[in-house]
Image 1 (tube, rainbow, N blue to C red):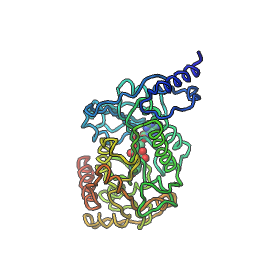
Image 2 (spheres, protein in one colour):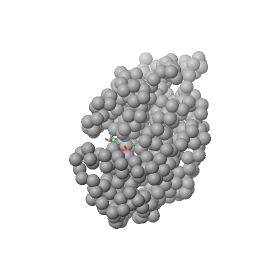
Image 3 (tube, rainbow, N blue to C red):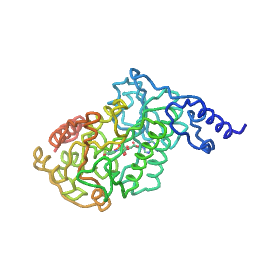
Image 4 (cartoon, rainbow, N blue to C red):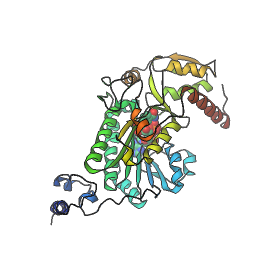
Length: 369
Ligand SMILES: NC(=O)c1ccc[n+]([C@@H]2O[C@H](COP(=O)([O-])OP(=O)(O)OC[C@H]3O[C@@H](n4cnc5c(N)ncnc54)[C@H](O)[C@@H]3O)[C@@H](O)[C@H]2O)c1
């Protein structure tokens, strides 16, 4: 019997027996001609989810320090992957494996052989880099996302992907932007993130995928070098303050954007992943901590380092992007549903960043301005 016919017969059998556990409506038989045979669609297999007592086995795409926050589940239970060589400390903090998100078969092998139950998908091309290379951004941010979403569905994984303030556009309410509103972003990064939100929610509603997504503000971190995003200035300014004492900012001094300290961002992600499904009224939430302009950030740093000089030389690409993004996030739903509360405001963020970068420079034998 042809494979397509066999799959249709199996599907009809499932309908008759009413034994589909999470899948609510089966896709059309033409799915059987796709190269990816979703196991639960072409067999009697149902999702056997781990019990809440089981520690999750986590696969992370994209080298971010989120893996350190997830190490509470055991070093060996968290596998980090990327296509670029990670910092040396990563190798002493558990398994690291080379994996390209465009390589579906390899990802599937990693999930199967390691008994993965949670997939945390960070790999992406960010906003400014994406505008410079639309085709690559579309490939990594959309095709790569389809790969991991399909795998999460096929293997009944809890799936997390971050979205962003960049998922909003000039026609969205900007101050504040609520969870549910018009989203017409004008960057390939934003378009791909909205696509991710909608695909994940579709797969959740139609097939029961445990899809979870947080819209992060600009994330401020000592350890992560600026990755080609529009909020990069808010990391670079700290390094410049402690090295040359001069920062040239590519955004206007009054450009207000939502921001968050990396430790709040990681804690939010882990708390959100731990929340029982029954508590989630949404699958995509805004999370907020603070909102500031380059001028306000500079003034707060100058309280510690009065010699810091900031000049402005606008990058029209990044300024246009920033002008289309929300100035503030409304995160009422995240606070109500799963208790989100940030620990860092602007004062705490600045004090922590300056202390951490100073320590880093001293340990590397670099001068501190
Ligand atoms: N940094 C922020 O302020 C911010 C804000 C909102 C959302 N996010 C989201 O958080 C995630 C991580 O952002 P980041 O700032 O750490 O970005 P980053 O650029 O530092 O990291 C992205 C990683 O993806 C990897 N990658 C690229 N192509 C790949 C491929 N083909 N296969 C596997 N890996 C590949 C890169 O090597 C890189 O390590 C992204 O999804 C981003 O959209 C970040």
